[in-house]
Length: 247
Ligand code: URA
Image 1 (cartoon, rainbow, N blue to C red):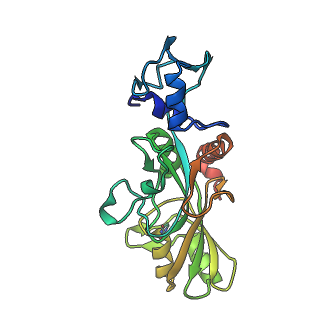
Image 2 (image 1 turned 120 degrees about the vertical axis):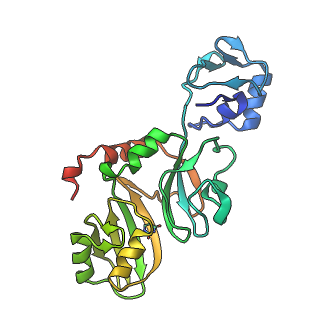
Image 3 (image 1 turned 30 degrees about the vertical axis):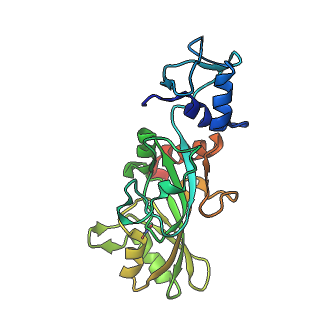
């Protein structure tokens, strides 16, 4: 991980009493912050959180080396770090949580809403996304026609698409034109193409869960916050599940 400015690093630690950048600067100016036992002289001092020991008033901090953010993605944002095709989900991240190297772990279409994970930890993202981990993603889908048991059977068998047969997926009918769909893979426009193969068009798509982590109730559309330890544990647990048990 690249070294960060000391004030930025302190302000990105989160926790129960998060510091703003201004708080961090004030603490440094008052000489209350030490780095490797030496009083920090400047907020601009570059710190490597993996090796430095930072303390406030002599109390050592366990510096977070990575950031894990949950986003309730609204429509109109692309799941990319490149703004070639419209605003990116990174634009929704408040400056206090923003880190160099942040990227969306997985993709949702521009018009899809719901739960996304943003991180600067490539290894963690790989664990959640690697196809062999079979981490389930659950979507609430609105269709132009009522979903049918016939569609559910085709999903369970594996819908054939132009790039091959999909892994079995579950479809439960929840309303007149709505269904919950659970996938264990993430192909391009997968749900839209699976329904198109069954003669239906997706008119609304919302991701409600990644593995064991549901979209939190306290995360309104467009909001970003740090994942709690329990939420990260839920994600890790989903990635650790034995795929042979994945029904
Ligand atoms: N399937 C889709 O078609 N789009 C998404 O955004 C996610 C799954």
